[in-house]
Length: 118
Image (cartoon, rainbow, N blue to C red; front, side):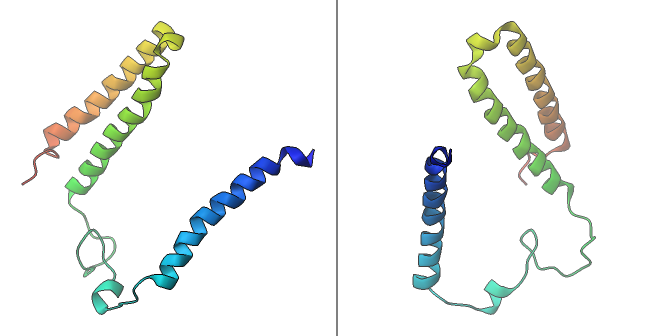
């Protein structure tokens, strides 16, 4: 029974080695130049100068929503396109509903001006 798990254990060991060895090499061989700018905390590209509960510009959230819209669309369209013959008309209609929902989100972003890079 244990021999069935041997390939999985070998795979986990190799994955750990391939992840840890380059990280350790970077720590040992990498440059060690520290300065105040590298050690200073930052949030969204500017110094933290107020309370952590301060309001952010809505464009931060709109850009995040835009990324999610396109990321989800691509992540679901490729497997759907590969399996279009197997899923049939039900799969086609489900993807059509999905794309309509994403299009509504995209139009919302467009109307809010998230695509205007002033």
